[in-house]
Amino acid sequence: MKPFFSIVIPTLNEEKYLPKLLSDLYKQKEKGFEVIVTDSFSKDQTRKSIDLYKNNLVMDFILTRQKNVSAQRNYGAKKAQGDYLIFLDADARINSSFLEKVKKYINKKKGLLFLPYLMPDMEYKEYKPLFDLGNILVELSQSLPKRFSLGGSIIIERNFFNLIGGFNDELYLSEDHELIQRAGYWGVNLKFIKEARVYFSLRRMKKEGQIKFFYKYFIATARRLFSGEIKDRIFEYQMGGQLYEGVKFKKKEEFFEHYFHQIKDLFNNLLKD
Image 1 (cartoon, one colour):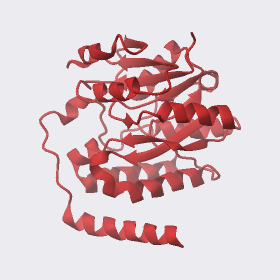
Image 2 (image 1 turned 120 degrees about the vertical axis):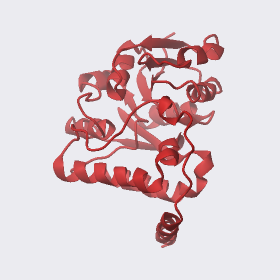
Image 3 (image 1 turned 90 degrees about the vertical axis):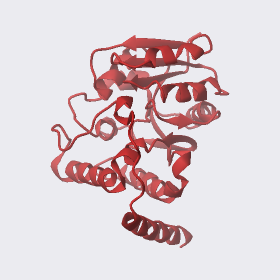
Image 4 (image 1 turned 45 degrees about the horizontal axis):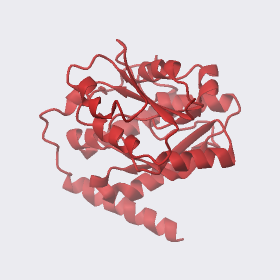
C-alpha cells in the first residue's frame, strides 16, 4: 500500500541520535509512512544502529557519497513513494501523535507546503519563549519579501517538491529558507501546523557555547536579508554526529544568561498585552 508520508533523514555518523528518532517513529499512532535514511558513508555504527527497527518500520537505508544535507535530502526524495515528504534531522525528536496531527491537518486544510512548530529539546525548556518568538517571526515573514523557515523540518507535497527542483545543494547555508522562498515564487504559501511539534536539538549550542551559536544565526540571517542566498563559507558549519564525540559541552555563559532572561521577560510581557 502506498504510504501517505515519506520521512527523509540525512545522516553522517549519527549512531547515537538516529535510533532515538527511529524510536519516536516506531511509536507513531499514524502508520501510513516509510522512512528513508540517506547516509553519506558514516564511519561509525549508524547503519548497524537501525537494526532494531528494520523489522518494525518500512525503511530504506541508502548510501550516497555526497556529504551535503541538501543533496542527501534530494536523493532521499527521489526514492520516496509517499504523497508528502517530511524532512527531519537525525537529532530531532517528535511525540507519538506527530504524524497523526500532520495528516489530520493536511486532510482538513489542504495545501502543498507546511511547517510544524519548532521547540527546544527537553533539556533546555527555558528556551521555549525564544523559540516561540522565532516561530512567530517566521510566520510573519511569509508576508514579507524575504521568507524564512524553521530549520530542515519541512513538510511538502512530493510532486511539488520535484517540480520546483528540491533543495538547492549549491548553497552553503539556509537551504531551507531558500526552498520556502522559491515555493512562494510559485504562488505556494506556507501553512503552520502548530499542533505538531518537532523538538530541535541544541547539541551544537552545547558544544560551541551560546554566544558563538547565536552569533552564527544572527550573521546568517543578516547576510541573507541584505546580500541574498548564502553560497560561500561565511563561517565553519559542519554536518555529522562525529563533531560531538568526546566533547565536553560548554556551560551557559552567565552574562549571556542575564540578557537571555531579559529577552524572555520582554517576550512574556508582549504576550500578555
